[in-house]
Length: 108
Image (cartoon, rainbow, N blue to C red; front, side, top):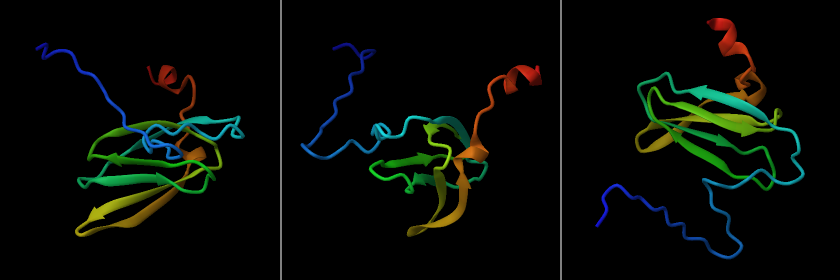
């Protein structure tokens, strides 16, 4: 057995998309690269719900960076883990999280 080889198996059902890998709908032709950081000490859930026919939800651990593509009009909802549920703590437009090309070069 090779312990260094990892394979990923995906189980799909007809008519049901894979939540973590759903591509944007084909009618969304423009998208931007976005960056979010969980600067808290709590687990967060990032969810975009205002784009029809698209499912986006990610768990973001404390200190973790989340890099994703979305339409500029998308709004990401940030839910903070509060036992036994999650509470909506922030709503941010993806335009505000946009990664500016060349911004990193300017910092150097």
